[in-house]
Length: 191
Image (cartoon, rainbow, N blue to C red):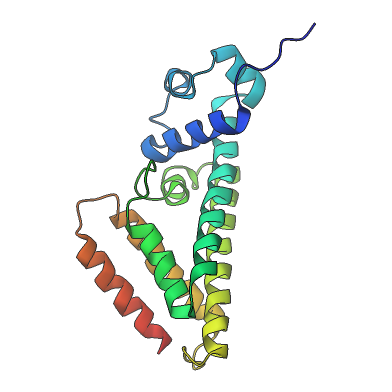
């Protein structure tokens, strides 16, 4: 008779995601994962395969986690400008129980040059972020909030690039005031 799982798979995957988010891929050992996830090493291998496979699953989980949080916050926004500010605020302000920075950005820097699957997942995540911003820009144009002088895709690429930089800086001791100044200047592109 097969043994039943003694853990909740999405819950332990969230724990792995947060550990990779905080420490990065290389610094996170299998022992760290076993200890942090609270499951036996054999169970980890049986459920998720090796460290790299677990990491790739954690990247997918991260993408879903961030997309869900952003979409929920954007729904609450009354204007497109408010929605974009929410996206930037989400990147800047500490989220309870979450490491600072961005797992996609960290993964791109650490692995993209030498791991095609990690590269593909980070690029896909970045493209999704640009598409989200392009949608908000289109909404702002319909409401007359934003300029039509530059293509929405190009504006989204530029704003997303600023967002990625903010995600990097948010892991440092740079002041939140400076990060919000960057947001203000970046959003000036929309006028």
